[in-house]
Length: 611
Image (cartoon, rainbow, N blue to C red):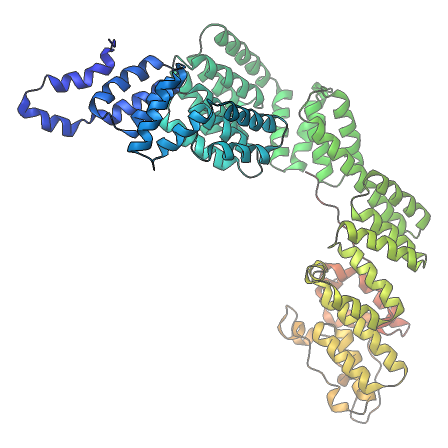
């Protein structure tokens, strides 16, 4: 005879005591089946088989053929090691609800009774423990599909899925669905809370901890998780608020621990140096490095061995491009950090990164100072630090190119492209090599590049094509093939219509070709539509050549500078990346060198921003 609790009997008994004429209306208002099914799930979530048993007994009297009732009876029988009863329930499910989810779940549960099923589950767990997450997930799916036989196995599966790349959000969603269906399960909520905090959703995590703490069955676990999460937080007003809430819901030893931590944090927040530390760390997290540095330095006076402070200050300096300072601070942070600190691997990686890019920077500076031997030494040391990155190989290629060692330069540039196929510097290096052989060969190489590599050249690709065409035109000009040279320059001008020197040169070639009517080309668009008015633009060749054909001298850059009315060359087209070219061009013009002969700026290299 079953012993039924008042909580379970209360609803059906109240219905039974009603007058007969009121019973249909009461049954319509209160349906006992969903409530009793919820009681079964609550009992399973809280591991209270007595509640499951009582609810099942009532449901078997009301709806004996309900698939969820039969499946719950099967699960209870297996927990009680009554395999024959579980098999009979499976047979009933197969007859009455063969297409139901409950039948599939029941089959999965019965599969675990067999030796083969237990071995499959063990294999899936071993794969997960070994870090073979994709294979483990497939093993779970092969065993259960999407019909997990118990709540514990469903939680186990979704915890595994959360470890896969880009799958944490899906796992959180599925665990939240399970939590609504099976409220109060401590294991499920513990997993879900950890995932919410890892996903940067602390408000949801603390709200769930509050629910756990309200249940006497899970309060101890909730306090333990709550305390662990507060210890991971930086000491701040937010951490104090969470500790105060924790003290209010905890008891015994957990309350003592929470109160002690609360006192410690209150004392720290009263310390100006610690407040500077907290504020500086927060600014580093926000990427406000310049504002963070004075605060971090102030805090370091009081806490000179604080590894977290040293590491944060190193990050701030590194992101501001002060690599030498960053390297020294990262080395100190690693010396002070605990062996098991979660920051060690991050700092080691950043230290390696800054050492590498500092060597690249020093190599670039030496190369610009025309010290190829020193530059080569820096690039070789950078390659020894990280041979997988293309920029050390690019630097070695630049050194070889500067020395006129074409074969070595090509080898290094190809090595750089093998590691980084869209390295614009290496692509420009290859073009420079082919350009030395012939402009046509360089153009062929540029045409054969895949679209992705041409895009890596950025806005510079049209200018590169234009310069190569101008170089071909120059050879035609040397052979006095003025018509062909003008046509080549016309193609170049389509690519760089705002190049005033190209416009002047094209006009000269049309005049030499005997077509003076084509010499007066339209003004560049930046003169017509740009910020400078037409009267301030550089005069065209026809302005300096009167009708009698006598040629006026082309104005020097100094005169053009006055005509433009600009305080600097920044007002001329081409942007900041061309400003440094103007002095070379000015020098070239004064010596009568054609624009195409003048060297322009070398490549620029920018290291990725440190995190």
